[in-house]
Image (cartoon, rainbow, N blue to C red; front, side, top):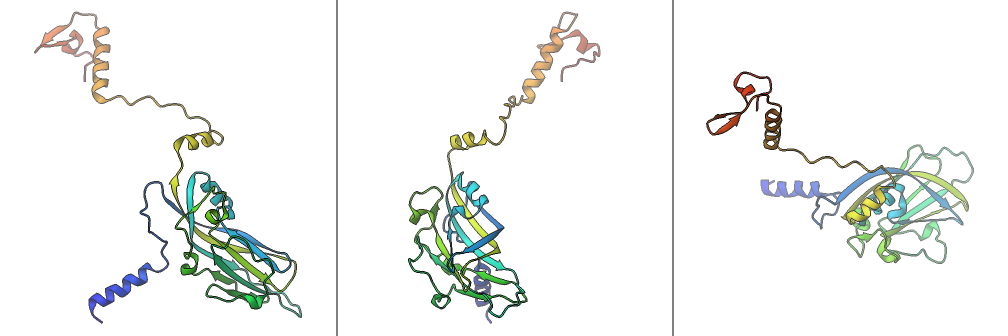
Length: 250
């Protein structure tokens, strides 16, 4: 294979799975990646979780000081289940971008189809990992979503739908998420919320330059001199300095 073609192929491989980078990162933009235990609460076989800044406490705290956010990676790990029963509970999951409200009628497992659909059931020996494809997760009408927008279309990036064959159920999974933030809010707002969490720090004195420190020490030596000053080369020097006093000017 020619060298230039091989380098292009390797470049495409390295770019896979990286976050969107259409806006240049600066000193205020941040990217956080963490894990969280997330619970799916099934009522009438349905569970719906909006993908917004309110999905965790950490994203909420960062949303208080940043104006915009977007989720660039999302996955769930459902632990293995050893349930010995005649009927095994089945689950289906799907992520739909930019959908604000759930459908009026409940979904059955057979209704799930698409590139982002996942399926698992009880009594399995290994955990089931569901990862939202990056092309589906990033297929949103807005590049960034607001952390404090009153309209759902500007605050919710997408919806996570899941259906199980048991009517009432609660399961907990391990969520791994990557969120980007931009547009740090004004400093007055940060100062107002900072006083509630930490005491005011005392103002530090301004640093003194080395030249000013030399002049200050020189004045102290002159004020403490018991002998009249002496002129050497046009500069006034105390007698202590000429006779080896310990208080020599620097």
